[in-house]
Image 1: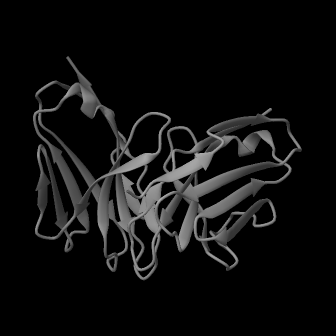
Image 2: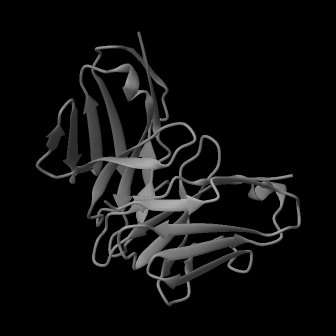
Amino acid sequence: RKEVEQDPGPFNVPEGATVAFNCTYSNSASQSFFWYRQDCRKEPKLLMSVYSSGNEDGRFTAQLNRASQYISLLIRDSKLSDSATYLCVVNKSGYNKLIFGAGTRLAVHP
Amino acid sequence: GAVVSQHPSWVICKSGTSVKIECRSLDFQATTMFWYRQFPKQSLMLMATSNEGSKATYEQGVEKDKFLINHASLTLSTLTVTSAHPEDSSFYICSASAQSSYEQYFGPGTRLTVT
């Protein structure tokens, strides 16, 4: 079983749609959680950290469910510029290491 | 702040030659640097972790004699792919973190093509 699993997609949605991505992780002792965004042939960029209380940044909302070892990302009012691959990332417990999911591809169309 | 650069951004080399990739933290001291590899449509895979002045720690399955890592200063780490083969063609990305921080700052990546 992979340490971080994501639905690869692609998710094809129209502009203005709301889309949700899910992610599960296998190590219950993981401590830090993130969503990164990666554009084609570019490096990943931090979108937001994920906290147990849930957090929101503009149109983006992230949730963490430690009991279910589940992380989600909700994007509201999708823009064309949101088209990218979204990576679920987990910090390996006790180590300064990040474990990346394979990513979920989002394509927003007019 | 927290800018990481990589050089070169892309390189094409012949099979059997060696290629060196540089990773620099431009505005902070990176006590730890990480090297990742990403094949098309796959996730980033951590290859090794290096701390300044220490030997790199390689992930399982990564040949330390093939992928030489040097982290001689707090702002520079290098990855040398020795005797490159076409299967080494990939996107190599470094990241850097400051002391006591889990946050990693990524370089723009180096696309290596071995012919």
